[in-house]
Image (cartoon, rainbow, N blue to C red; front, side):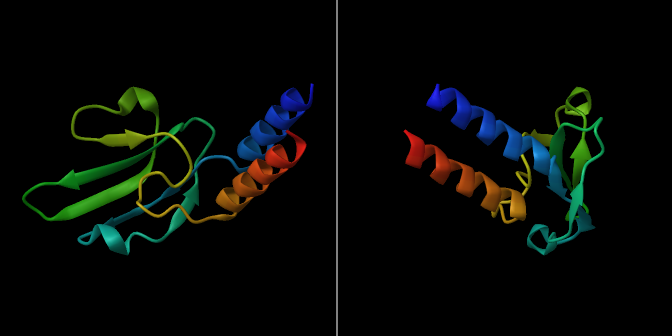
Length: 102
């Protein structure tokens, strides 16, 4: 029963944050530091590198439109190598709570 309660807590904290993605159009992928809360219809973050122009575009996307050239991923801020956000902190706290009650 404790495990079920911990899982509910974990899922609630994860869902409360909603999906957040890095969003930008830039020549340097590392310069994409702006984040955006995605509308409900979007369930993936994406990165699109435009060959020949040395540009990258990042933002929110629906899984249906994730095709060949568009690299999509699940989870908040997954379209960058460094996940930093209040959601990440909440997930860490919920993990700590789970460890305390197991």
